[in-house]
Image (cartoon, rainbow, N blue to C red; front, side):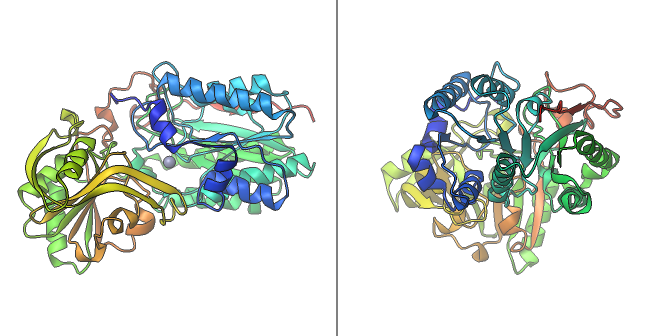
Length: 488
Ligand SMILES: [Zn+2]
């Protein structure tokens, strides 16, 4: 990805200290889960800093170093602590750091006493590095994608920290890497056999005495790192060998299912996909979702160009098209104006190129609201200068800050009713399913040559392991790493 995610991008979402507690308490976020459990236990919370950005280009080294140094400073100023809870995504890279989360944990460990309990919650899409297991006592991942259990994951980590501090549990962690990577589109946990693998991980603590927690991490195919791929983490009470045995068994199940996990027939080419979507929409009572999943920056124009050329009389809408230039132009022109726009100011050839077209401005202004969807409930959302544009049968909301449309806020905040559409063009990977899977007549997944293509062989990997399935047709190598038992 050519564009780095800089400090100013992260700072737009950043919150600190007392404001962090106010902003995130009761939300569907990991920090919301931390706060719920810690406050219920009357623990004293020292909130440091929280920020997140949509998946985009690599984080800048400057941004990484600024937050690392801020956390180190915060730990020094906090004085003696009983434990540390962190939420890290786990698939970040920077231009010089293939494993920034490992670097961060290493730096934090250097500031803390070696046995200070440190628990980390990670995203299901983390590309975990084996060294993470040496640097924290336990790690926890979201069980689902869409990530509807972010707060519960934070709560799992916080409960485990409290249990360790009270001497009720002695968490021992094993992490097993699986040499398999999937395009994000196939990491939807409602798709079998991934659904069965996740169900197995959820059942482990009930079925196997001594197991505290188990997480399956699917990895993130669009980060080029030596740690790319699936991992399984199991935590057992005082028994590292048990944790390792169960993690290896689950990893073996994933490896055995690798072909079925790669849903070759689920994506269609551009022409076939749009043809099928138009045909379905023409005969369905409910709208059809077209998923241009390969778009990583919400500004691809492959599908949009075709639909603008020929919407076949169908009512089409595309939310959250990321184009600050067109948004500013529409805001300057105002409601009711007709303007000539070039959609896709930052769109590269691989993302479909610029579309020159005339638009009617239906609404324009600065868009801010509080999220209501299952993943963004209670979170303040700022899209910056934004507009609702119409091009005949096709309408489009353009925004200045890059955000994925995953819930009904993306439509309703602009006065668009889902039920009145024929085709909704989305660019989410799995998160849209929590809301749109039950509402849509069908989901048609279209693959394009864009950066997030489902055909991973099209991507120029330089650092990923050479033995990853399906990049390498067969792989027999497996790396397994255990946490060295720490002193009791
Ligand atoms: Zn994720």
